[in-house]
Image 1: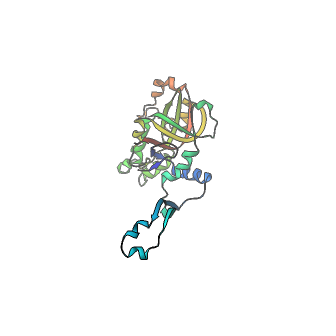
Image 2: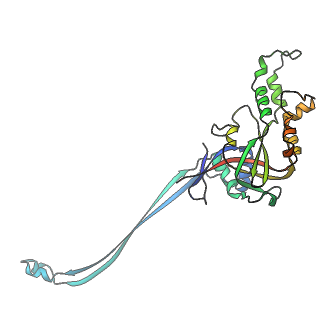
Image 3: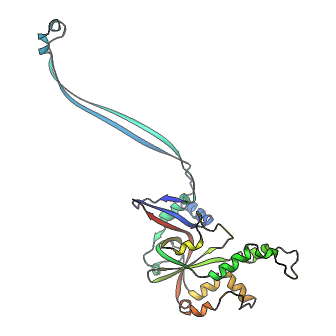
Length: 279
């Protein structure tokens, strides 16, 4: 699990659900292209001693022999003594996805209202509730990319690695997610792979459980129906080949006609994180 202490937020840490590492690395290097390998921690310990005393040898005169050895002295004594100790510890800094993401997290502007944004702003949006919009396409794409068709005989396609062919055909497939932030709708996509799209053994459905924080680049306001057509790769292929009855329920567009007419704010997502409060 990638976990990082967030400065400036008391007793708060976050863990990463999803990160586009290549994108995060490039932006992080633009912010600061120095990768810290070591750091030194200095600890100073200072001790002070203050004392007051009185030296009086008059009473020792009554002790035999001592009155001959010790001179007669009566004085007040005060003094101060200090001791300083410095310890220097060298610590190796481990570079992780969290440390790469941290400068971006710090620089991103926390959004209060989406309509106040400009295209290209690096933004941080907290408390977003997400839902997956293309579940049927996901099932179909995952089935095709998993190698299921390798053992199926297709007439005219003898000797063709169908899985490799489909990987090329469906390489731009993505999870399409939407979320609610106050009175606005957010849409974004995550590139689809056969496995390991998410961090720390999370699955795509974990994003639908509870609010999350999005970090990304604001790409403007778009018509919901038009933006879905642009980013829904499998549906576009189905329509291209005229396969309206492919088993994927594209008729859901009719059911969601109200949503299709709504404008949505598109976010080029860099990371999705869960912020945690600890005591």
